[in-house]
Structure formats: C-alpha cells, structure tokens
Length: 392
Ligand code: 9MR
Image (cartoon, rainbow, N blue to C red; front, side, top):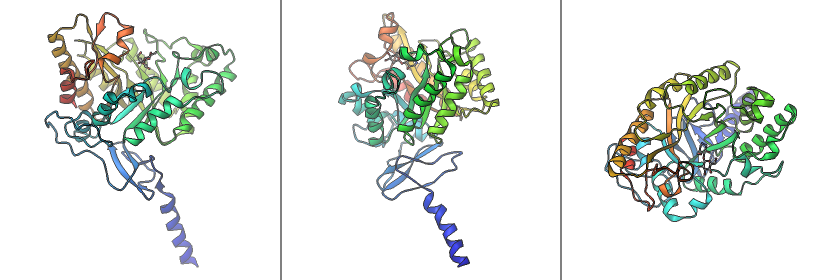
C-alpha cells in the first residue's frame, strides 16, 4: 500500500503537468509543464517560449542564416527559408511580427504574406477598449477572435494590445469620477479580455503610453483618479487572468536620450520595487528616416532594467516626395534598428506596424510623410525589406 501511494504521488504530477493545446510548454525561465497533451506537440517558438500546437510534427524553421531572400509562399505554419521570421529564429530564437486585423486578414495578398514571412501578430485595433467594451459590461470580441484564430491556425504567437490606454478609450470610462469604481472597471475589463484569451497570448501591453511627451505621468482618467497605482492594479489583474503571459509596459519615443526614456526607466524601477509583476518593455519605435542612430544604445538602457525588451510597432517614415535614395537610406535604417534588437540578448523580437505602405497609419497622421513599411502599395518588397532581413 505504501508503495502504491508513492507510485500515485509520482504519477499524478506527471499527468497534471501536461500542457493543453496552445499553452506554453517551454522557454527560458519557464517552470510549468514541458510536455503536451496527446495530439499536440511542443513547438519551439523562441528561446523564451515554446507552445503546444496541434499535430504530431514540429513546424519550426530550418532557415540557413544569410540565405537568399526568397519567400516561401502561402502555406500554414512557420516553415520558412530566408524569411523575416525564419531568419530571426535561426539567428537567436527571436520572432519577427506585424500588426493586422480582420479586414486586412480577409485579403489574400496580406494573409499569404503574413503566413509566409511573420511569426507574430499584434491586433492593430481590435483589442482596444473602445472596440472590446464600448459600453460598460458589453463585450465584443468578434474582431479579436478573428485575429487570434488566424494566429493559432497558422502557428503565430500574439502580442495582446492593449489593456489600459488613454486613447481609443470610450467616454463612459473617461467620465468615471470615483477611484473605487474605476478600479473595479479596470479589473473587470482586464479579467474579461485577458481571461478570454488565456494561454493564447504570448505577451500583453498591459499599459500603453502612460508617459506624456515630457516624460511626466500622462494626465488621464486613470492617473487623475488613482495616481501611479492604476499601473499596479492593471498588472495585478492581468497576472491573475493569465499567469503565463509576459506583461509589458509599452511606449513611444524611447529611441534615444531624453526625459521620456529617463522617466520610463525610473518608473520601471519603482514598479519593480513595489513587486508589480512586470516582465517587459515595449519600445514602439515609430521612427523618421535618418534618425535611428541612437536606437541601439537606448534599447540597451531599457534592457539594463533587467526586463526583456521588444520593438513593438516599428515603422520608418520618409518625408515626401520619396526618392530612390531615400528608399535606400530606409534599407540601411531598417537594418540598423532590427540589428539593435538582434545584437541584444534580452531583446526578444521585432514587430513592424503593418505590412503594406498603403495600409499604414502614417498616411493619415503625418500627411507630409510616406512609405514607412517593408512592402509597397502593390505588395512588392522594398529595399527596406532586405534591410530588415539583413538585420534579422
Ligand atoms: O495603427 C493604429 C490606427 O489604425 C488607429 O487609428 C490608431 C488610433 O489611435 O492607433 C494606431 O496604432 C497606434 C497603437 O495602437 C499605439 N501606438 C501608436 C500607434 C499609431 O498611432
């Protein structure tokens, strides 16, 4: 009997340790299950993340470093030779991603490219507060479901974007005037959204753009009612809803010296000293042609906080009118920025903010700039593509 009990004790943890489909099953620092339930296989995504994916064989990359920049068309999974994501994985286990959403994913020109070239997806808009919870307690996950389903069917990891942000925030949230109400509203929003996709999201941008352009805490309903504590509340809620996702702070203008990066690093220090469960810093990197020289040193400073870092929304916009020499400069700039990440071990991946120049947010926001991405309006690879590939 004694031996039988010992056997049971030995067997039970083993059975319980099998990870479900789409769950994490490995990666640096991972202490959870490393085997997958029957019918799924533990697939290496990068050094920090392996995932249980359906099927018995591994769709990971067999890329040769420095291989010719040919694209493997279509096809599910992430098998690739000389693609952006394949090269990133081969050269250090990082991912190369892009943002998208249901409208773009329904176009084969976009979705085929994503299947072939990218290993990670960020919902450009579909997980933002005004989409997911436009009125209190009424959740709409339609668009987000499309993106997450596409990612799962094609073996892409997902960065969730974003839980608490002053922008694309419905008026009913901005109108709240009680700290207690706002706390429970944040907690409910996060537990619903993060909970729905538990185990399917690699990393969350828990808070986005909490600093203003001078590096002060941004004045919005969250800070005005709760002070800096709204960040602690948001991270705690995200951790409770999905303990295995990486939890990030995300911001722009962290690409060189200045008040903003100083403040961000100081803020991260305070969060860590309060025990906030923060894992990563996302540097958006919305950049301007020719202004990328400080990116590597800035990224190193962010990594010196001890957190993982990632480039989350990369684009490099060109002042109009766009010339061939500017497009060549853009190739250099992409290589500089992507290699700033690949040269740094705590940097775990790069995400560009869109696929084709025709779909970039830059057109409407910066009318005197153009062409910030890797493919032109007809889905032809630009010189910038080869710059990114060389840096990968
Ligand atoms: O690319 C997004 C665009 O489609 C939206 O209209 C815009 C609304 O604010 O948000 C854009 O994405 C932003 C991202 O969510 C946060 N960082 C800045 C990005 C560009 O504005």
